[in-house]
Length: 409
Ligand code: ADP
Ligand code: ASP
Ligand code: MG
Image (cartoon, rainbow, N blue to C red):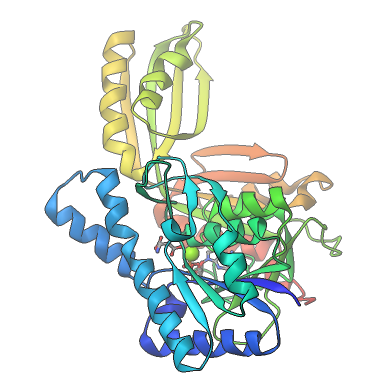
């Protein structure tokens, strides 16, 4: 008898009919004799609707109250699925994160799971029930409801699979696997039969929202067999694995992009030890995450310093930097919140030279100006103007022949 964790995303539970369809699917699996834990998201659009409601009350609502509010979306779907299963004659029980006791830290809206109490779930599974758990949420040690960040139901599913040593964790969504890039931007994108944890982690952290970053971290750390599949059509999806693909010719595996970027530059900064800290320290103190950083030496003993932040933090970071500019006697602060980051990812980069130059040549041929570059062992990211995003993704997809990826599985 195998134990599976099935997670269904917002679109997959977006209506009464779709919840009924999920129930049918779960019942078939249970009838085969397997033990099933189901993790659900809220109905599609529901979390956004709740956030918008909160903003009507207060421009900056308290994070604690936000979590009490936005965790409710998942409570609705788990109860409805449990009812749908009962209707099919299938024993099932639903739990919120707090009822299971998915213990998290107290970082409201971005909490991390510390521990999962498996006693109740085990007892229910052993008595033949399907266990339906609300994704995206937990409880801190003081009994406060917490949420795990947008897309956090993926992490609930993988964490449950790790805690209960499930045989596989299936993430059912509205695409039938992980693609070479977001198929909404490049219709020629191809499904990958498999992708390594390392590559998936880069793709997720560089903007591919098909899996939440933390779910991939968790799966890698606890060696959870993780598969992304379609809720709507049969197929074997994409396996996230430690094995590198047999396709030796693959230079890169995928293209990720992030529209939420903004960049800030401070010029004419006296080039002295400690300057990076003086610039970025106050930004970090305001809880603003900095992504790419570039420092250039000018020849007059000054330096120019550019970094990127999330677009939501742009105004705040700019105001802080303007203060720093006066304090340091720097020349000026400029910024741009209409930029995006496009990245190519692949373990193939380790063994192939010339990938960066192919990337830059391709963008140049399209007349796309590169504003910043960052590299690591298995990725190259560029910052470009947002109007070029789709063009950059499609041109790179063609240049690296990702439309020719063969689907093995
Ligand atoms: P769910 O609600 O099921 O969690 P998400 O919207 O969070 O679904 O994730 C699925 C979406 O991720 C797809 O509809 C697709 O547009 C997007 N996506 C981004 N990058 C990729 C990629 N490389 N492969 C597949 N889907 C991707
Ligand atoms: N409902 C949450 C969100 O929209 C969590 C999830 O869907 O994974 O972000
Ligand atoms: Mg998601």
